[in-house]
Length: 142
Image 1 (tube, rainbow, N blue to C red):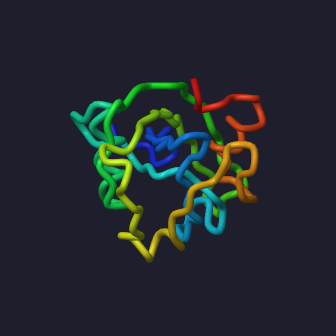
Image 2: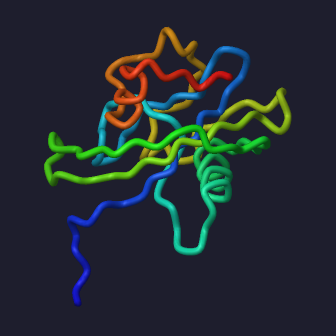
């Protein structure tokens, strides 16, 4: 049986929280180009959600995180993309292992840079999975 290119993919996005702010970057990738999103990426085979969040944050920002925990999940059908995609996005929350760390843009071909934004004052347009969550009234803070 061949693989279905239209089968849903699993993404993991990390709310890196600091006080009342979250780390957000402007996407430069084919999916969600020029929208603002959390650090994250595809769940790899055999990886836990916590491992994926930790790896993606490190690969994209250079930051080390701790207290990684599941917060919610969204089901997103990205119909406005050139090739429509279906993502189940697992949202994790974490904090900096060292509060003095400064995010770096380690994938400049995929992201324009990382900035801290207050949850009530996020940049627009948001990447659809994050926008869905924001519009629902969700908050990443306990």
